[in-house]
Length: 597
Image (cartoon, rainbow, N blue to C red; front, side):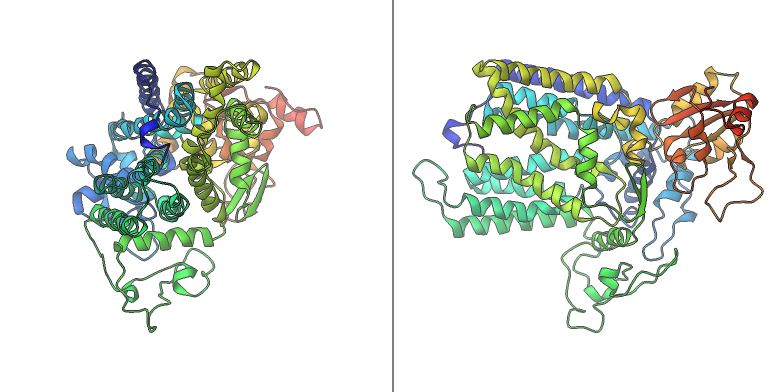
């Protein structure tokens, strides 16, 4: 419910034209980046999962995420008959065969990897939808200047640019989340059956995109309860019971869409018929080691015969995801490793990975709101923007079994962009220095992001020292997700003098190819990996080496000795190139200063 329908501020033609041009530029940036990055860790699984969905009508690959995104990205490869070696399909409970299958697919696919690029390009319209909704909503709340500012925050956000061109669900989930809430608030303003049907459909699509968006259900209920005392139209009373029935219809329709997306596979199966692996659903602790034991705490209880109105693979996906968080995987933050994660991990991550210009706009919006120097759209309208962001942020922060990917909070960002754009009201009202600050902050954000593009996945702001120092703070998809392996190949071709070249990069795709073309990298003499091959060469040794930063900071300490040398080149921001000479090694052995090569 932006504002009462008779006073909604619609963006003018000139603002809409400007927004269209920004979105066109945004699409171009995403499309170009889609052709430059090599397949990332999760993309292999999503691609092969999509092929499996289309070919066999099965959804037990990549269960931890709903299938809509995979159905989109897998369509071109499935239509072209791209073959997959399905012999590695592990059907045991809790197993995740998508990664081995995806690795094999990418190793066997001819050079060019067109299915990856084709799948990425198909997702761009969903990301553009999020940008348009952000523009519309901010324009209605705060005016045209704010609408364009919010759109710039979206279109040039390193998070959106970094993940919006990949075959992963995070950016698309952000688009569908903000679209669903925007449509729901339109229904709150005018609760008609037609608008209810639209909300139910969009909410269902959101549930089919990412499980995190389950938080929209309680968020919708809370927003509706807050709106009950407000008239739907000036002077028109609300009809709570009729609206409650429509909300039930909205939720039912979204549930129907969710089940339809799975082809109703296993819908209404008995709760006791499933084999679970998480402690939550088995009722017993996880076993030590990789071996999983299936069970079901509901068997033999009064709940055993409950009919679950969810697809089988959706429920089992929740179970496997829960098992992953219960496993307490090793996590990295600020140069420190520990089993499990941190509840404040996402706060830490966004402090370093959101541009400082965006933070300045947020702080300015808070100040201008507190001092009432800008017009407010009403408490409910602003709560409706901030509540979904807080719900999503709070939900992902509560899952602290491991802390690997700050991208999980991406669905919260469009709401923060809308609220931050409130500061741009000072541009339209010409309130002196605040307008200049808002303009400068927006420009700073755009320039900071574009300075790193097309390596937006590895973006870190100036507070962190930029992306060259990002690995000192965070790892994994925050900086090194296998996206620069294609660039490594180009670098090796352009630098024939760098031979022999030892390579160890994060990301298992192309492993066979890389092993044939390059040498292994010697591990340190004091490595902490007790299971390593004792016959493996030990370093340091003279030679050329390309190491991705995830390998450099690995908790096993394989390559700690490289911290004593300066890299001679960088490939993107995730791979460092070292040239170790015998003089450098001797100098270091004799207690010399950090070797510069």
